[in-house]
Length: 441
Image (cartoon, rainbow, N blue to C red; front, side):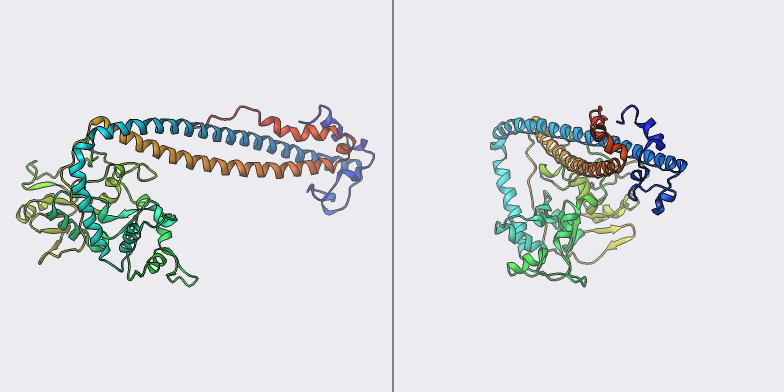
């Protein structure tokens, strides 16, 4: 802060022995001095001194505000670090509890796991046979145990490997509905992962030495043609909620109804809810906390209905809004678009799984809590990184403003005649930082 008599002394400009020492082109004052011509009259000196005083007060206020910002960001970083430490302790404790719970139910699911793994391997082999595809390259790299990089670490998997069904016929029907291109689509968590898949040269042409094209060439599997890349963070998720108590978190969709109020004969369910998903992908897959059912599979299937027969499907036409399939091969893409002719076999289908063994409620709840904790930790890390950038920028600005403020003081004869003032001025903003900051929310 300024000394008590600083304002009175600097206002009485005629008391300065040498008025020229008050003026400098760096201060940016108005009047004749701004043009490099010193106004040595009493009124001119007073006017310029008042301008310099106003500028110094503005700089001091800016320093005080920046000091408060710095203190605020520092407290935010400390708070976030403390929250992460507490979360790490809870995660460690829950890991031990989960290990014991899994051991107690392992014997119940051994047979199921073996059958499921075998079916998954069959699907992977189907993809590997698609030699010149991006999906084939990724599966080959995985089989070679290649080290993950920035590109592959963001890839969640191939569409065909991220869901399972309970029936081989249903697997073929859903694969036909989606088509081979979609079944081989690469699913990324973020848009950064999508961008990493393919790079371009200065002419906008694909650079086949980088991205997935470069990886393909490195294992003698060059990619030909187009391929789909799906970004989960940019999909519009289903917001209608899930069925309460359902361990697979099936979507709470409104059942189709005839004008009589009855459910159509032969209606089995919605395709999006007939996909079995690994528990780790049921929630907290995206930055917003959503799982694969309400993002990826809702985007692919929406409210696609499944019926027993084509006749029953056609009888339910008034209830079908977004397509339907029947177990005997009937296919309606959407309202008014019917697929006719012989069925087309797609080379890649969803893996098969038997009915899931119901895990104890405490296991399901513990796994969900575990996923939520990891998701919260990722969000805390993002918040901390953002606060650290803000803190760094605020400190840099504070340093620049303080240098400007000190230069202003050095250019005044009053500052040279009273060096002790310099310490007070420099410490003004520092004292502001001791003010209690806003509470982090």
